[in-house]
Image (cartoon, rainbow, N blue to C red):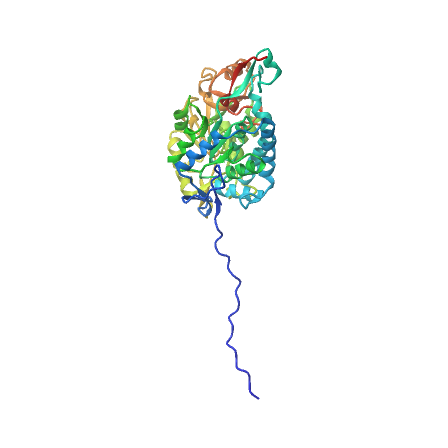
Length: 475
């Protein structure tokens, strides 16, 4: 019987190996359809791994986009408020750019290095700001003014609160999602808005602008215009008013102009002799380390009447035990950066801290995670006088300068603070602190420097900058 021919052995089938995932495409959101530019920049995770591509629009695109914003009409007030509230719900519930909300939050943590729990707090605050923007924006309106000339008060003559322009531009920050809740008030007040996202973390503004459009704002009422530095100034030049985030050089460049600079916070805590700091240590430490220490409302300096060493020691004992974890870890507290950037920050700190007493971080603050990223660990340095220049050094991680203070030193060492928490029973001193023009917010008692909520000013009300009053009489 003839045997059948032997078939050659077939190699065992191996499961297909997944190829590299395509990068998320973050298109520009101009006056028409989403625009994918020929020129794009890579958005990377803190490990250096690529995550997304951000389209960069040329100057001509910006010019045309800003003209479209000027030519557009704003939604009526009640429609704006309703659309903003819808946008807040869309922002947190819909799949946008292929990411559901939890995936988006994890991506923000991996890209920005901000701990995932901090990202969650910030993104929910953005949604809350959108929900309440129609109310919070108008908290800045003077008590003697009305919002509409049709109000009956203008029959006998009244102040009317009006916009100083029609188009508002924002050069956004990328170190924390939270600031994106602020410019929503400009939309609530009837401005058309152009946002230039940070290349470091463009995910939040892209998602937010998309949500606003899905909620009812037209493409010529709110835009996302990613650009290079050459075209960035064209956004500000094409707007009536603007807001820019940055360091001291940004503040100097734009102070007193039609652009509102948002610079370092240099928030501080003062403890006078009549207050036992031990009773407030939780608040002091939390003010330093809350949200990874990345925000302008984290405490940069603590000034204490008397010997600062015991307080510096107590702060050190609390901060030293914080673990070093990747930003997406549920137990992460500290921010993470690419190793090279973390080393550069560390070198800057060590230069500026020369001559101080290092309680923590004197040998460095970088803890490498082995994947190309590094945690910025806390630093505590003691100064020998309240007016030491280091009290003005603000870094985006828990870095605090502890200094002695005396009544003779007075208010001077506390100037230029976004927030000052004053742990004191001295009414006269609190009066002086409140009168000091360079201190934006003063909290008395056991309130952390990061306390904030919709309806209260951050660095003054944004409406103070965007609006003015005019007298109207009719009839």
